[in-house]
Image (cartoon, rainbow, N blue to C red; front, side):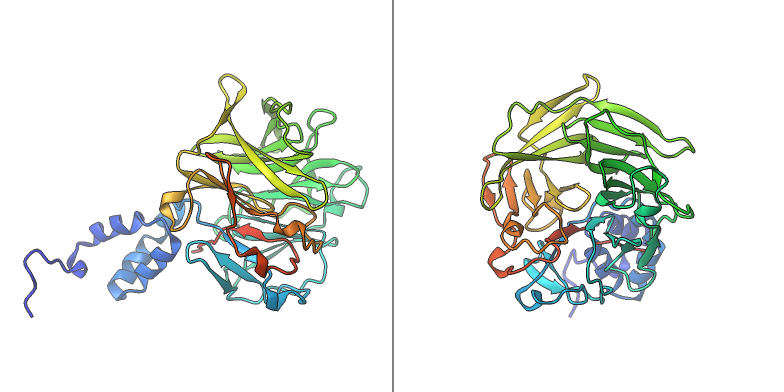
Length: 378
C-alpha cells in the first residue's frame, strides 16, 4: 500500500535530527528502548550515550520492599522493588550479596551503602559487573571517637560507575555525631571539623561541587573537599523550631532547581510513631534566612534513608507534583513491623497523606523500605 500523504518514515530522518530527539528523552527506560528498535537506531544510541549520561536528570526512584513471600528471609538475595511509574512490584534482576546483619543501610547515586562493622561497602543492584566496591571500616578513621561507630547517613558526590574520582561523605555515629569522608585510594576515612558545639549532623547531600550538611537545629554547613585541606563554612542559620508540631521532628536537606530546601518532618512518638505533616523552607542565601513555601514548582521530593532528591513530576507517569514521598525513619537494620508502615505521599498544598505502596502487603521489613535511584552506565 502506498504511503499516505504526509506520512514520514522515522528511519529516513537524518542522523543529527534523531540524535536531538534522543537527547530529549528523560527516562532511561525510553533511551534503552530507543536503542533496541533497530540497528541504525542502536548506532545513534551508542554515539550519543556519553552526552546523554552527562546531562541525565535525576531518575524516578524505585522503592526497595520486603514482600509477604520474603518476610522470613534474612538476606538480600530475593529483595523486590516497587516501580511507581508502572504501579507494580518487580524482582531485582540480580542476586544481592548475602548479609546477615549490618549496622546501617542507605542509598545514593543508585548505590546501596552498607556499614557491616569490619568494612563499608557500596553495591549497585542495577549493574551486572563491577557492582561491588569495598571501603575501609569506619573504625579505621583517624580520630578519637573510639571503636564503636557506624553510619548515620551517607552521600556520594557521583556515581562510581561513571566517575572513579567520587567522594563519599558520611555522618558517623559513635560517642557523638560527626562527619567523615572517603576518597578512592585513601587507606582510611578522614574526619571533618565539627559544627558548632551541641549541633549534630542529620543529613548530607552533594550539590554544586561541594557537600552540604544539615544539623539538628536546621542550620546548613558547606564542605568543600576539592583541596587537600577541607574548607568548612556555615551557609544557613537554624530553622525556627517554635512551630514544632507533635513530639518529634526530623530534618532533610534537598537541592531543587538550584536552591537548597530544608524539609521538616513532624511526627508523634506516642505508641506507634507516625508522621503528622511536613514543612518546606527555601534558603535565601542572599538574605541568609529560611522562607517557608507551599509550592515545589511542580516537582516531587523523595526522602528517607536515601540521599534526598527532587525530580520534575511531569517527566514521569504517576508521579504527583508538589508532594513529598517519604519512607520509615529509624535504625533500618531492625525489623520494626509497625514503624515501617509510616510512609506515604504528603501533599504540600492541602496537607493530605496517601499511600504510595500497598502497605498491608508489608508484613516485616528488613531493612525498612528505601528509595534508590536507577542508574545508567557506560
